[in-house]
Length: 377
Image 1 (cartoon, rainbow, N blue to C red):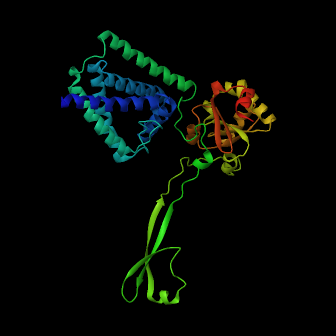
Image 2: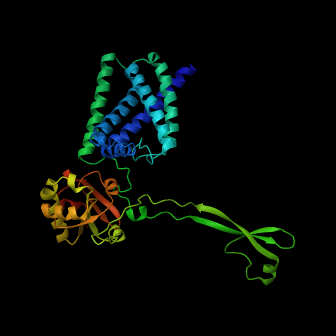
Image 3: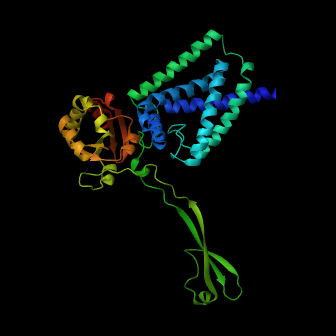
């Protein structure tokens, strides 16, 4: 009886972890591809960049399907083998990554839950133990339905996850876990949380050696008799609020002269549109002539700010701007930061007072009048 309960717990833990990991990455296939590129770059395999996206979609699909089939007991012989092979490969790999730290975090749960490399390894140890037990007990786990229906279930889930990945690739992630998601106030996220601490000063009596502790803003410093008897020896800090790095760090907007205009644009008090194109060479050019330029002219006609942010050089941006006849200025930002803003090249972002009001993939940019009617007072 105990082994049956343990098997069920293992299936729930393993299945839930794999389903969550597969789903969070399937809804953001470009983010998963960027993480693959980080690994390829760290291991000196830049030549694998072209397969980053298909590899990401394949891995995300396999994770979700394996987790789903193990949780529900579908095709257990195949599912148990796949689960064990997954963990036999990734557990030693994550140990190596934890030891060498080639990338900041594994990205195993996308942007939904960021954990350290060592936390990833410890998580994989638990999943490896679960996978081993599931593999040993695989013949004791009955099929959910008939063998034929199980194939239909597994196949249907596979098609569904692949469709979800391509849908989010051609549009935007259906759930945005990044700091630039709609509704967030970016002005708060670019500012670190300062440490708040109570400071206590420790004084020692010169005659008796007795020590006393006083709040830094409340001790008898103006009492001559007290100051003759007591001398400062140490202090103690009681941290009330620890220092935290800003969620958005390293983001800057600079003009051709090299001036930093980040604060101006991030805190712009009126409605403004940010056209984000992290790499102009690979940006969809048709979108500029078909949608973006007319949109920009109408927005500017109404007095709203419209700028383009790119990671490309200013020389190339100037050439590109002439070729697509862009009626707006280009500014430079770090391409990695731009990729986190929107999963589209180009993509459009609407902001006001630092708050993200709307985001659109270049395929889905609506006419300006529709945006005006829905978002602009």
